[in-house]
Length: 140
Image 1 (cartoon, rainbow, N blue to C red):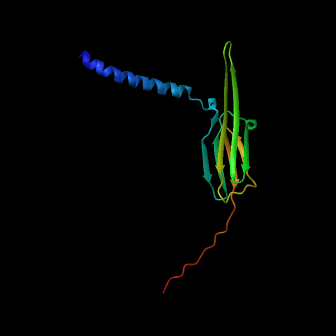
Image 2: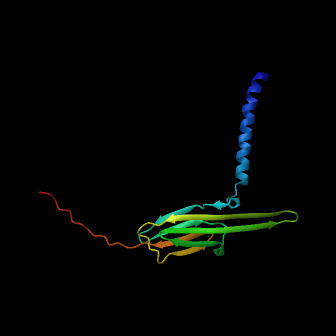
Image 3: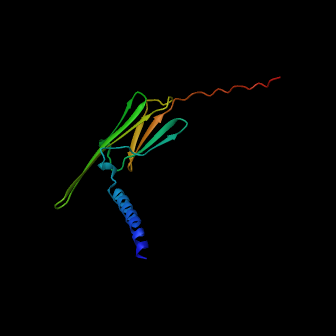
């Protein structure tokens, strides 16, 4: 019986070690402690505009910038947070960067942004193209 236990324990220790490593990774996983962070982004396609929604929790308007370089929309931000306690001081710092190539029918004039509840919303108007109906003729 002892022999069976000895074979079981190394595998059990390995599994425990892996579980502990995963737990520590999840516990210390803080995107703002990274040098650069790429936030989640949703792109919605509407008839007359595109809407980009970017997760930027904890950031204020002053912490963000939205620029257009050619047909690339660039969203950048920076966050520095300091927590002071009696004997401990912690500083969290991080920057975010996201570049999105706009579709050909996007109009750079009229781009609008709105920030609320940790989400930056960018509305990009689309050029309206007329639709032409082409008649189908039956072959003889």
